[in-house]
Length: 122
Image 1 (tube, rainbow, N blue to C red):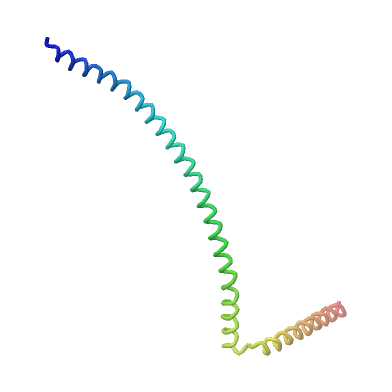
Image 2 (image 1 turned 90 degrees about the vertical axis):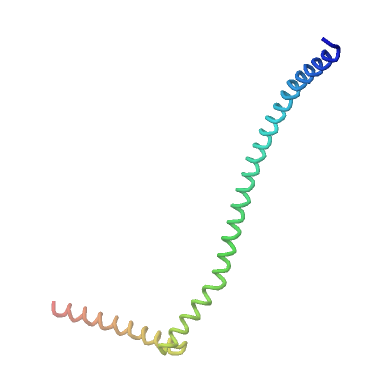
């Protein structure tokens, strides 16, 4: 066999040996890299969940504040408008409250009179 054939065969054999050694190192680094990336993804997922939960809490607080700021005045205005449509204004409302209080007194007196009458017939 010519000398150059031995050189080529030796080079090919050396290349195969180097490839085998390098492929083990590459596979080892790849496996460590995958494990590291997997760990980072898990940690990042936990951080993402934490941030999402904080965002949800903040959004819930903002919605509650907005509701507290807008709903009561809106409801009060609607109730006042509806009552005014039926002729109930703050002044007539006070009059109605006085009449209701007076009717409570009259009802109480009537019930006491009825009980007194029942006792006298008993």
